[in-house]
Length: 233
Image (cartoon, rainbow, N blue to C red; front, side, top):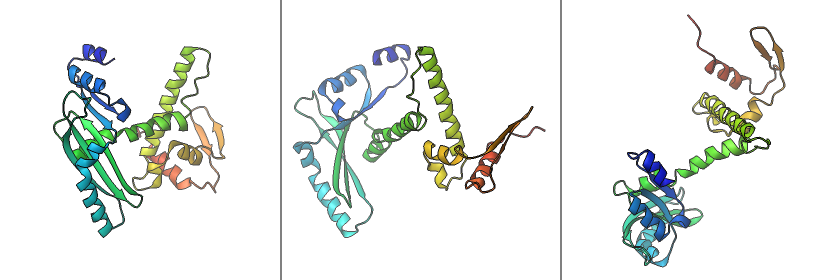
């Protein structure tokens, strides 16, 4: 697949991000041979631990003096496992908090950038991508492809994709500092769609009448105003 992408888009730079079980000597050498950039998780071992033992101790001591929020620090160093063909850049993330000490490692062939940026913005960014997939699959039931025809299932996926963007637009219209701006799609659906209402279809419009006691009346009015089509001159 990588070779096909490179053949069709030769000017496109490819960056691979993967967890530690993909970080094998064969994969690392393949990336180097194909000119790919990568950020992979790296499993812990004793040799790696010796490189950051002083940082772990000083971080734990600093946290003990001012306990509270987690303390996170980083260190970059060169490392080569016995099975590797050459030394590579490794970034260690040391974190100490109320639950104790936690150390993680990544390996990359990116030369620039601080370790903190590469770990938090490139390697850990996959967590937000997984949340987007979860919202589409779990909260909008996008995995319900039970039709007998492939074309019908494809149509269902397209409709679920449209529903995702409708909810994304609706959530983005909520006030920035309100909890609704960060709410999951299933929470929004429960509070904004599953409501008792009277619906009257007329020739040129549809009238939705909500009860006076609707608990989300203020939020609904705000969204109706924010999402209303622009008025014509």
